[in-house]
Image 1 (cartoon, rainbow, N blue to C red):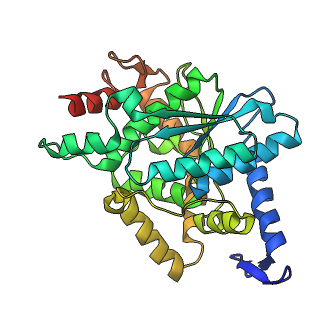
Image 2: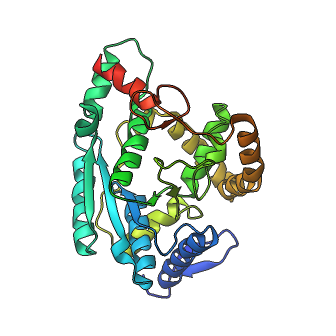
Length: 308
């Protein structure tokens, strides 16, 4: 492959060389940061990382964006070790090497430390009970709180995640299919509808970049990482939606973009309706004190189930 060889074809038919593609991705991500005002000059930014392609890409590009402004010291990386045998340790090794190369401070927290059990142990416990709870349900519940509390302890004002356009399209459909209206308004490049001092706002710089584009970006940049998938993901509802969307995208190019653009046009109305029905008051869990939609948060309820 020469420098002038095409490596990627856009939806409009334009082909890009390696250098053009790298510039395309970076400019699109930086434009997303500016357009949605994801960062301010005085933000302390924590990037949620796992060592996978999405998190390494968003960490690299956020670091590059801040470095241009002389603000790279306002950034650190945060990894959550769920405790998945023969999987997470490999991605954390990749992550540690990456952070060392780019001189980025890395903090690692774990489910074992916070909840008393690894994800593997929690799943074994749930399987011995009659609870119909998936691995992704346990992990997602614990991960959301772990990231928020750890980011807050680290003094973050913004929490960056590596969600790409595919992830967002999946989330939109997932919450529609599950009739989760209260969650829909919180999606978008910057999460949340109401604010609370205990909740660190989340932002998604890769919001308009597809998973395919992220993967190609990491390959062309030569990032040292394992392109592996969580062993528990194959049975999830989200995976089923991802497969469906990929099949539709193959037949009808641009479907994923259309879903996300439709959502962005409807988001304002969704937020208004949410505030009208739910109000702008945030309740807190009576057990742990974290922001919650109910008297006892999902995390504490899940924690009680794995410790019974």
